[in-house]
Image (cartoon, rainbow, N blue to C red; front, side, top):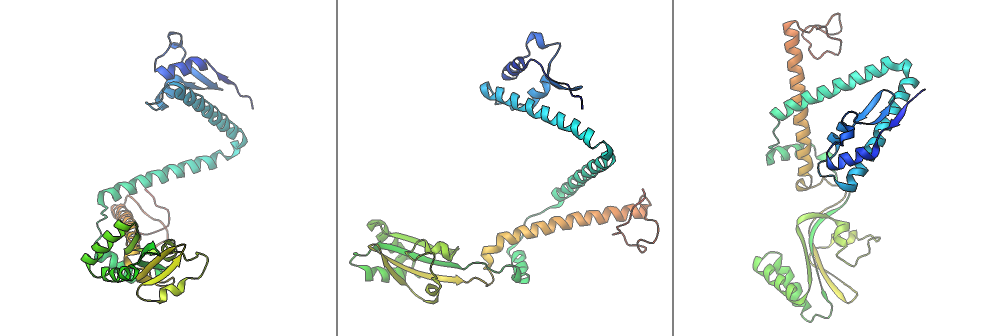
Length: 304
């Protein structure tokens, strides 16, 4: 393999790309690098350079661009020599890739023309109810509250009463919130969202490595003491591992599934339409006994 590699005027090229002006002495020859008969022109580097790149960054960009260009050219020439007997296969793969890109562009065109992502709550609920077996939980989820305060707080019993009343009364909830803010107590309210049981436990002194499933079996407000702190907590909802996930947890996932399904339906409908029209007009034809008459979903070759 005989390769001629030459880098011409790198300093001048770097200076040019930094200020975007051609030096007078480069007007007649604006080649930065050469591999065999392939040349890298200044204009190509300038076009590739981001507009906001200046100073030392522009110098680094040019050096990196030239290095990558040299490697690309040399590897392509090496491949031509190593795999010269496989040109037909390479040409075939290139053509298949080109066709694949074009097909994806066509698919995307019709998807963008017809796609709608407006799914109603009923659409999502219907899919959920039909495919519940697909949404089995691999962890336990809970809703609940945790109140942490100093164990020396004298009105702890009153505080438990207020926490119990706050579960059903907005005014009591507001009072509890004010008390916590005034005394620096921490109130974590996770009643409006499902969280992992292990995540919920991070607000409690319960060891993560221990089996704390027994906490889920109790109702009402529970208590823990550790490190001079007292914890009141309760679970308003529990969905255990192995059960079907609540709809609100998987609704966004279902929405993505429905979008994918609708996309596939659009592409399939377009494919069936163009095949049907082409066959009906005689523009496409399948010869032989590969399919029965009228079957437009054939896998065999078409003659156009």
